[in-house]
Image 1: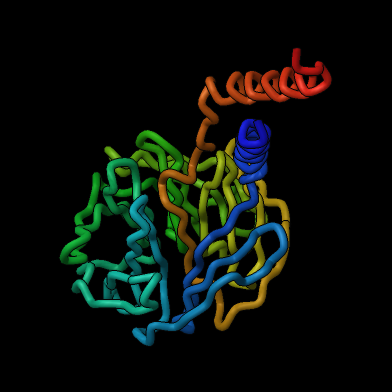
Image 2: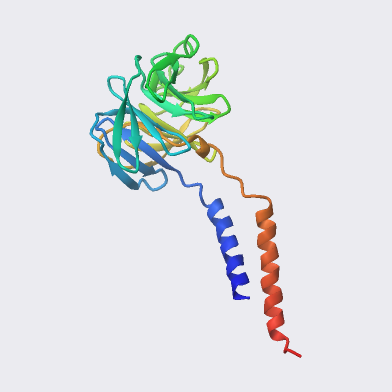
Length: 270
């Protein structure tokens, strides 16, 4: 009977863990060459290393945990986060200062006014469409928003309001439209976790960003070697992982077994 009580406790614990898993941990790359993981709630640095290949314009991580980064000068690298090393893939052949994986593990990037698909074997970039839109100038990152939608930061066309502005971009056409001003300069890192868009600035500060208005809200500062040049989360982080419908029922059912067991203990054996 003790095993049933333990099982019920473990199932309840899994449900709580799922609900509490909204704290965002985002991987950042800096122009000093550092790669680190940042807790956007506390500002704590969980891991940090420098593979020694140069300063990162941006990095991207797929659902398998494979990371790809681009350094100043268009060099594209595969990054082994476990071994803390990087291997050259080649040159992008175009100016790109942002990267993000989309659904299906396709890699995309932006640079100046262009939206690109990036070959994960060679690093070569191919322009999608004919430009994101008038006034768009890639500030430093894009984030996968689900479906064919990406969000990107632009250092231009913010309606006269200071700071970078947020754009929505369609990955099938490469065309985008402005959402609004973030109100923060140099937002070089973006990542969506559990439906929330986070921005990380060159001043090593984390913000939440409203995807309907573009407005940014300060969350915390963090300390890392170098200025933040990019940020990454895997595509699977975009939406919460749903708790199976049967899990709450199983928890209730096991809870009932525990109650029955306790009552039976009070009844003397006949």
